[in-house]
Length: 421
Ligand code: C5P
Image (cartoon, rainbow, N blue to C red):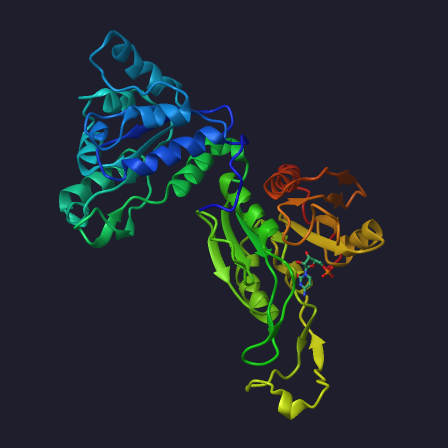
């Protein structure tokens, strides 16, 4: 399950997806995939094999896509369709892809509408295999997958390990979650135009937890949403993304390498390891400024403290400032500033003192913005004293606007200009 709302947006919006469905029990999951892609604004043309129709009916797909399902090559319509479907597709997905389909695809067969259309397409191809684990483990299937992957350049997703069809127990062979296929479609649809292909992106997110004793901690209200949205968007745009996050309930964004930490000191260690190879670093974490100097190794008890508890706090490292010098000289660094007053002055001062190229300023305590909200209202400040005030937007759109600015700095090669640190 993705924490993002399904609504028309780039890179899905207005694009054409061919969704091939072959004959496996996982075909029911593809109804959700077809629905989600349609909700994201894609035009989804479903092509079912004869075997697929034994598992699910075309009407289910037609109900969620609003478009006719293509089934047979052997009609006047089908013989023209095999070329037009392949030619007009922006991405060609087959989910589930059975062992039989993989064999036919690997050998260039064209014995039904789906494989014929596959040969006619020049769009990126995404396959989500699903089958019994014994069939997946067979060397012939492995050879077919290998050829699809490396010989033909198809993207093969999964399968996952997990529960298989009834009576088959669990094992390797379960189709990946439809949301994973949808995200991959997005990345393939963005393609090179995504703008971050070949770039490493590092994002910090979430709160930190500073232990007081083995059961208690000092934390904050950050949900991680903004940083997770940035990591996801950077990956959709083609980046190789690492997300270093404090405790958050959000699931790992698809394709992103996620490093989960607890304390500021742990976060610093992870950022130090990755900042040197990242052209783009975005510091979206809400890091605790202080931590208890001497956390107790036993639970603090009321009986031992009396009615007052004194805790001594020491300063945490400033992760952004400490890692500033690691960003490559042509890289771009983005910070966040959450303030209750003098927002723009304070944000501008932080931009310079911490050596950011851009800083995203938002006011604490605003409705529809900040911690735990699904939307945000921010102003982006740059080193030329430029101010870009954005309206209230869903956090994934805010992430897109921030990355648009990052990409224009990367294109101009003006990141890291005259850093203070
Ligand atoms: O000083 P302040 O906490 O307002 O700075 C905010 C910016 O600095 C954010 O980008 C935040 O992620 C980063 N920061 C950090 N390490 C800290 C404190 C803040 O990286 N200890």
